[in-house]
Length: 187
Image (cartoon, rainbow, N blue to C red):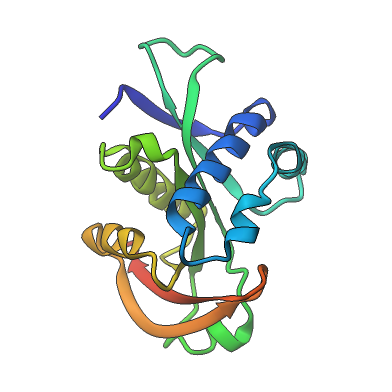
């Protein structure tokens, strides 16, 4: 694993987060999402979106970044992964299928640069995001994984997340992508 640490994302991380977002999606979702979607991901548009998200004090998303370090705490640390947690964003149609949604948080995203896949850095970021969920007062959490993203499903299962039979269709892209819910007890 590279020398790394996890810290809260800052607005000046937006460009690096955007680069990772595009690289991770291109690597993970090729063959799952339409090529036209992946090929149209635009660094300037992604950077602007991340700048807005990270600048918005009303945004309920808590975003963390994994950075490669040389042992210092330099503002120039190289970001190689990011993730976000928040209160549930899915509709009641999805959440009502859970036995109990009390204390439920969402791991909304986790993305690593493909060069760091398999290095253990994802585990470090995942555990930091789980700790962030706990710090925000959530007692259990869920995440949604695109059907067909076998690497991610294996990763979550390896780290104690449980695959459920709950599915829904993510219609934020066209054609829409079916997703599977995983859950974890944070106690």
